[in-house]
Image 1: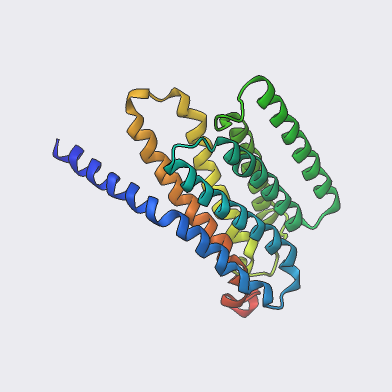
Image 2: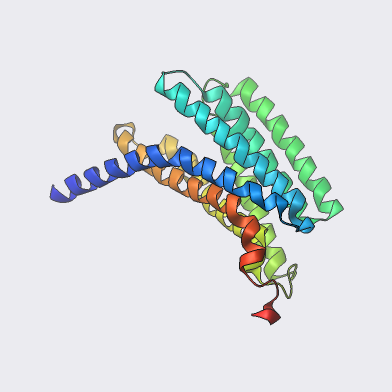
Length: 238
C-alpha cells in the first residue's frame, strides 16, 4: 500500500509538472530555432524551414488545445488536422528533403497521397473528426517508423554520411528522437483499446510520459540545426 501511495503521489506530481511545462517548452523550441536561419549553412535551409513549420503549427495547436480544453470545448478537429495529418505529411516531406534523391522524393509524395486517401476513407467510414483519429495516427506512426529505419539503413549500410560526424548532422538528431517518440506512441495507441477502462489513470500516466517524449522531440527539433556549430563536421577532425 505504501508503494501504491508513493507511485500515485509522484505520478500526480509528474502530471502537474507536464501540464505547466509542456506548452512553454514547445514555444522555447520554436523561438530557439529562429536564430539558426541567420547562420550561413545553406545545405540545411530547406530542412530547417520544414521543421520550423512543424514547431510553429504544433505550438499554436497546443496553445489552442490548452485554451479549449480548459473551457470544455471539443478540439479533436484541430488535433486531427494538425497533429495526425499535417505533422505526418511534413515529417514525411522532411525525409524526402534529407534524402535529396528525386526517385525517393516521388515515392514519398506517392505515400503522402495514399495516406491522405486513407484519411478520407477513415473519416467517411470509421472515425469522424469529432474524435481523435487513432487509426490514422497508427498508420502515420507506422510510416514514420518505416522511414526512420530507412534513414538509419542509409547511414549504416549505404554510407550516406560517410566521413561525417553524425553528431554534427541535424537530421540525425531529429530522426532519432522522432523514431523514439513515434515508436512509443504507436505502441500506446495500438493497444489503448485493449486496456481495461477501469485503469483509466494508467492511460493518463502513460500518455503523460509520451508527452514528455514529445516535448524532448520538439526541443531537439528546435536546437538540432545548431549541431554543425557545436560538433566537428568530419570524423578526421575529431
